[in-house]
Amino acid sequence: MAWLSVFSAMFWLVFPQTLALAVGVRDTLIGMVLAAVVIAVPAAIVVPYAARTGTSLAMFSRRLMGYWGGALVSLLVAVTAIYYCAFETSIISIAFHEYFGTLPLPIWYLLAVVVAVALAFGGVRVWLDKFNAWLLPVYVIGIVAAVIWAIAKFGYDSAWMSYMPEHPVETAGPGWVLSFSGYLSQLIFIMYLWDFARMSKTEHAKYHSRVTFGLPFWLITFVLNGLAGLFLAQTIDIQGAFSETSAVFALIALMSFAGVLLVWVTQSRINTTNFYVASLNMQAFGSRALRWFQPRYVWAAIVGVLVYVLMLADVIGFLLTALNYQTAFVAAWVAIACVHIIKARRAPSSESADEFRPGRVTLLNPAGLTSWLCSAMVGVGLLAFAGDFGATWAIFIVIVLAAVLYAILDRLQPARRAVLIRGGDLRDQVDDAWAARIKCERCGKSYVAYEMDCDPSNEGRPICSMCGDTTPDFYRHAVVEATAGEEHSPEPAA
Image 1 (spheres, rainbow, N blue to C red):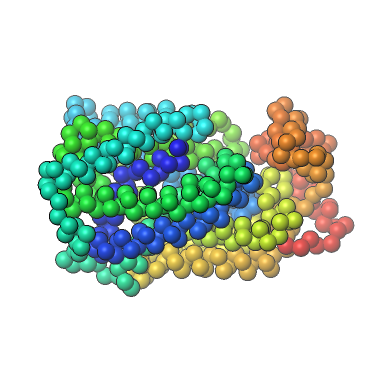
Image 2 (tube, rainbow, N blue to C red; image 1 turned 180 degrees about the vertical axis):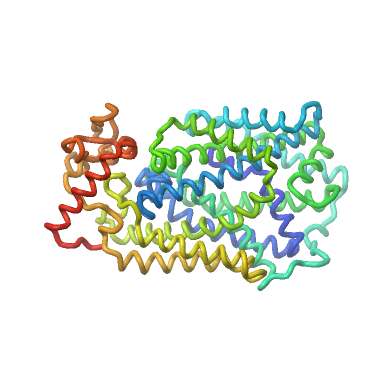
C-alpha cells in the first residue's frame, strides 16, 4: 500500500495532456503503453534481487559505483525526491489557498510541509502502509467522481480521443517516440521501488515483480490515469495555459471542496513516498559522505526545511530543467544495475557481486562509475545541445551506452578494483548467515551475520555496517588487510 501511493499522483493526470498538446492524444497513448511495458522489464530484474539480498538502494550502489560513488547515487535520488516533494506539496498549498483564501500562500506552504513531514516520520510497515490503504478508496472514488461530474456538467464528446494540436512540436522521429521518451524519464521510480521491494519475502518476489511492481502497476499508473487525465483536460473548461496548477483550479471549480479533498489525497499519498525516499537517501548520504549518522526522522525534518525553502524561492521552473538533465543519470544507473544483476545471476557462486559491506568494497569502482558518468554526460550533452534530436532520443542512447560500457568494463576489470578481498568473513563462521545474529562490539546491537564484518582496527571483533560507516579507522585497516592478502594470493576472477 505504501508503494501504491505512487500511482495516485496528480502528475499522472496532467503529464499526458502536456504531451498531447505537443504530439496529440494518439501518439501520447502509444508512448505511455510502450513505456509501461519497457519499465516493467527493469522492475522484473530489480525486485527479486532486492528481495533476495535485502540491500537498500544505497547499499547496492556501493558495489556498483564504489563506497563514494554509492554516496553520489544516494544524493542524486534524495535531490530528485526533494524536488518532487516541493512540487507536490506546492500543489496541496495552492489548492487550499485557492479554496479558502484566508491565509497567505507561504503559511499554507508551511502547514503542508509540516503535515507531510509528520506523515513521513513513521516507517513503511508501521504507518505509511496503513495510511495509504485508508486513502486508496478515496482516490479511486474521487477520480471516478471527477469523470462523472465532468460528463454531467459538460457532456461527453468522443472527439477528445482524436485530439491533435494545431501546431505539433518538431520531433526527430514519430510523435509517439517523444511521448515514449517522456514517460521513460520516470525511470527514477525503479530506484524508488528498490527500497520497498527489499522488504518483501523472497517467496513472494516473483509475484511482486510481476504484479505489485510489474506491468499491471505501470499500466494502471500510466494508462488508466492518463486516460482520465486526457478526458478531464479535454472536457473541463480550463482557463489560461494548461499546467498542473491550472488543472487543480479547474478541479476545484468543478467539484468545490470535493476537488480540494481529491487534490490533498492524491498529493499526500505520493508525498509519503517522496519524503520517505528523500529522508532514507539523505540518511545514507549523510552517514557515508559526512560521517554524520542521525535517525531517519531527523533527516525527514531536514528534508522538510529544504522543501520549504525551495517552495519559498519559487524555483519550480529551474527544478523542472534540472530534473530533465537528472533523467540522464537515472537512466544510466538503471541500465548498469540491470546488467550487473543479470551477470550476478549467471555466476551465483560469486558472492562479491552482492557485496555491500563498507569494509569490503573499494572507494570507487572504475567500471561502474566510468560507465555511469560517461553515458550520463553524453545524455546531458544531447539534451542541452542536440535540439529536437536530443529531446527525442537522448534517453534511449544513454540506456544503450551505459549498458554496453558497463558490460565491457566490468568484464575487463579485476575483481579487486570493485571489492576488497579479505579473509575472516563472519558469514562463513555460522550455519545460516540470515538467521544467526551477532553482536556488534562497537554499538552493542545485534544484527544478522549477513551484514556483519570483522573489524581489523579492533582485533578482528564483529562490527555492523552502520558502525563501519562511521568509524574512520575501520576502512583504512580493511584496505591494509586486503592489500596484504593480495601479495600472497593469485588474482581472483572478475
